[in-house]
Length: 195
Image (cartoon, rainbow, N blue to C red; front, side, top):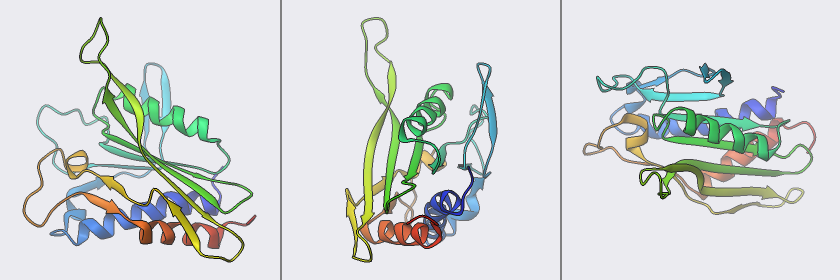
């Protein structure tokens, strides 16, 4: 369900990412931001809320998959968002580097932001095996009209995951700090009809 709170969740993080890249040599102009893209893999089609990849891909890199995606949920539960993040990371064979999920509670001022990545987990049969796991967890909440509380305040999105190259001078990772998370919470709750 695309409520104002659902849409604001991914737009709030997207706007901060773009704002921070604009301050780095206008890198926002070097990103392909494709919004809601549907991709089919192994007979299943998925659509995400925001997608990013570099404007110029390495020659051997598929054009099918983005490098970073954002999935937000309002009517979906956290388990569904987790399944979606796992799908994007697993099906892309490593081409999707980060899946961000943002879960907005329908009845309380609570938001969970998780960063998912493929993590090496060697097995006896495959020493190069990787599994999707949560590598960053932020919880944003507010009691009535009190201050916004943020647990796990830093979220780092590696530069290389967006652009598939090393950072040049004046470029670097996107870091969303406590203040950014408070802004995200405030923007979502301003349009959330039930809290």
